[in-house]
Image 1 (tube, rainbow, N blue to C red):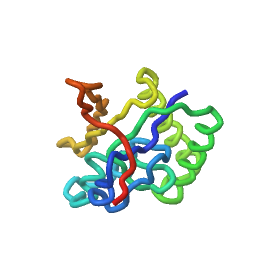
Image 2 (image 1 turned 120 degrees about the horizontal axis):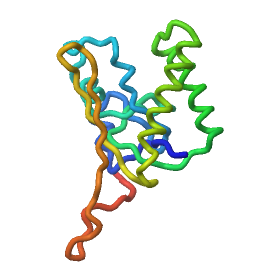
Image 3 (image 1 turned 180 degrees about the vertical axis):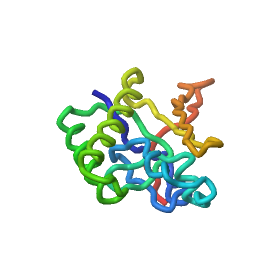
Length: 161
């Protein structure tokens, strides 16, 4: 099985989002956090989180990018239980059964998204409100050129600043 983990290429998430995800935490789309929001009420850094952020499941911060990685079935079950608890406690799900169903749906959606891509494939998300208030969400694989004329297009490393 495969799932998403947050990834950072630099420290920009700390400036872009009011609460940045921790690098390497399990991640879901997190669009559910905005399902009852009016588009005019989402502005500033929260608008950026809505438009382009994955939800980290440990910190509940946002990440611009998420990376496909392998996961065990036991870990999926643990994350699903934790997400259901958070949906009940943080997001006001009416009861635990509804929270469990919503968590299972969110987990299944990310597992389905990760079926085809190989581990280390990087995703970005783009969201917008439709005219009727529904959320339109699209996912894009971020692809780097391997090398062109001996020059790397990007590489990953630590940010010491």
